[in-house]
Image (cartoon, rainbow, N blue to C red; front, side):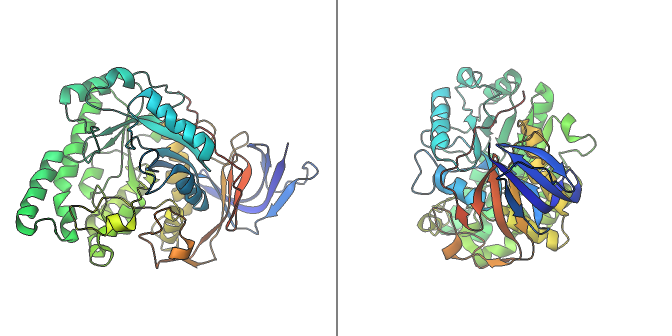
Length: 446
């Protein structure tokens, strides 16, 4: 069994940073100590020279576009970019083509990932207005969650029948993850702007169309329904300060029935960036005001918000450069999400310990992922080494997304991810990939 010894690391784990050695044997961490001198012969020794060692990032919301939309991205290309960005596990959404709204179609995606994914993986089952029987067959130990689009859906995945919605919330013990935007409010706002501008609506009006009101109406309704039914609810990608007041920090995460996520782009950009970035930062929910951004930061730091994720959702550059009504929402983020959060650490917006809590520990806790998200003896060795003194500029030449662009193009990050380990294997080493290594299907303790 192969072994690796990581020496002289600044280990960031469970609220502390300690100088430690970490010994890996096979897929697991077998020892953590200040100095490890006893290790098997032929052990690969990596002296990280006091660079940071983090648990692998768990991204609980990505769109890798396979099957059916592989001109934009695929599981291989995006998981490869993910591990270069320190993401060792991802949970992917059901709105592919075909949509993962039957158990057979869901398993088809798992089969693709088993062959092609560089990172560990799971997928969500997609709820609709008419697939409750199929939804209830979902295996809680082998599938991350149920995903419901309460706004901004593709195909027939908008769940807008309130009777059906209550049945779903009442009938499953699975975690229910939701996209919350009120479609009626958005349609009314969009129609008003189309009467003025036609299809060429200024991008600066995007947060007025997909407004604070649209978000709050939908998220407050979902939370009320979860409280009524006792459902386990996780609200994706909050974008407004107002919504943060719907969540609590009065109880520990393990006891929360309702949790929430914020995405990197809503913490990084605000509406002043539309003039420069245009539709490249068109997301649903929309990037909103600087006040909203600061409100999201405040709620993240005081633990009303529990997870930082990406909502990685690539489109081709030609698709994104269309007029407002035709330009799709979403953008690629997995390669640069951790780097962006390290910038926030350097700017004293957040501590590194808190970043690890929100990007590693909490997703593992919320989804009850088996033996991941921490640097612990007996846990899978999903690990990331970060040099916080080596800078890099994002250019087209070093972007790994299949779509070939990034909203961070031209940005200088003052940090570099040097090594990524997946299940004890060194998959990414200073820009070089081991293409033979594949991730594993995540397992859940439910």
